[in-house]
Length: 263
Image (cartoon, rainbow, N blue to C red; front, side):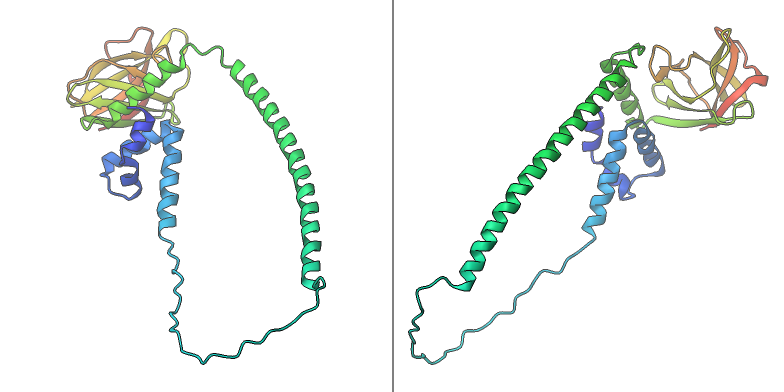
């Protein structure tokens, strides 16, 4: 599902109105955190709802009933055939308006020229910025596919999003694990983790009744994009990430626990 389809689904309106369950609301917040367009749409909806609460009283005109009045004698008034002061004033105002219009046209023409120069400068800066991303390995289409996959998984009611927070080894670290209880599929979105040594690699574990199950190793923002598919997990009550030797370990290194989250 694309961000546009997600916006048109109506779930954002229900989120702003507080009609979603806590789990659904958390899902919307995770999606919005990854998509500025969805964040912007939420703000637009909130502003629209706020404006709808302002009511203005319609103007009501009091009806007037016609009253019969006696006919009055029509009087004919003769005026001299000369330009009235009002007409002279109107002509003077017309000349002034023409001068103001001419000045305004010149002023706005100059402003448009300045705006054109600024736009050109912005385009040049934008082009320079685009030139700095030549090290990116993936095309826009591949990143969009990954984004759509992320949204589709989040929208699946069988998917649970687990936030893994930093432990003493790395308090500021964070990741999101998506686990589908029906398909057993597991994916991880690394938000923040320190770069590991060259001979080390991060490994995800699923915990059930204190017993760890290997969910696979992963790299930071590797070739799979920001969303990395891990090994399928049958059941778990928590997920934890450790730093292991490159290639992974059979058991987690208790001295290198980085992040953990409970379901």
